[in-house]
Length: 121
Image (cartoon, rainbow, N blue to C red; front, top):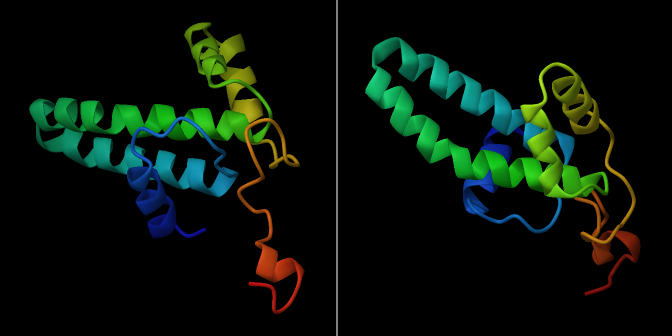
């Protein structure tokens, strides 16, 4: 997944908290969010605040889908509120590779049926 694909996917699933998101989708969107907020913060506090509000929901949604990808509930994002230990644990979870199919669905990198059986429609 490329940078542009990840940003489009996150805005396309603006408030979708179900399903799974791979590492690339999550980290590319995190980079996009960081760059946008950094640039807008240089110009205006008002623009920074508006962009923060606009990007909050898709950031929470992609974070939830990323945790679903490793088999954890999206509510584990709240561990971020625990200083240092919570931050380290959450970052550790977010860099884990995608797991196999779980209760939240197939993995984001799961092959499509036509990739498994050539000629299948």
